[in-house]
Length: 349
Ligand SMILES: [Mg+2]
Image: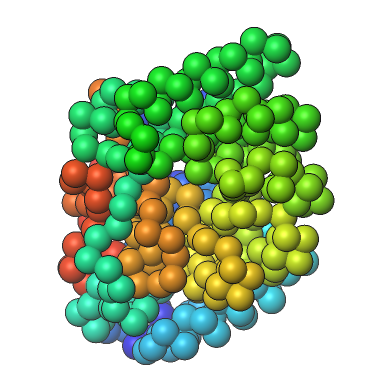
């Protein structure tokens, strides 16, 4: 089938926290074809991502054939090359992710297959889910056996105590066997992370996430033996297999977390997983419980671990995608409907 139209939209969000997300949060990409099949993708880059898709990538795609996975891969390479002077990382690749995912959705719908079937089929029936957020009691009640909570360094020695208290509370609540992680969103530094490694060792934390700036590969590599067996993890701020190959070369991380709607879509995700296999590093995609990452986790050598935010149960959120799968008893699986298996909430466009 031939691509006849490409359009991106920045949805009308009402619950996006004020930050870079106000203008550069997720976009929807719609790809139309001569067969009438329509693919929908989820990318990043907000209003800038929309411009990249509508003004640059869209016109390049008109008339392109999409009949198999290989076609999507070669389109990815062409768009990466075309955007190279202003792209490679960040907004342009976030926009490219939306196109790549729309093409996978399109191919799945055309063949009547879920995306995980296009990727070689499910390797497991469901994926172990972990709950990200601060409402530990809620996650426990919902049946999770894995939980990641945030901690921020504010420059105060008391932050060591608050981290230990949070870890102790989570460990007591979830039990000795549970998988626990801490996300610091770039607020710890080398000294703090090394000291946390000593103070939190007894709580058996699986990983410390995003401890330094993602540019400090050397610093992260140096931290790894200091906090082992806890892993140094990140990846939501890295892009494409080219970016992750730098991480591999520096031996900077113990676990990679590419965001499939930012890092270049399923095409880049598969290439990143292949690299990680060679490097002997597990991959657990950022927001992997959303369908875009979930289909990849189910059908690839990703770790059996999907991130999910369940806080909407107590707070309002924008429901852009309808019929999204939710975790049950701590596990999550996508539906077997064609493509990614979700419908777009058109009222948000
Ligand atoms: Mg994070």
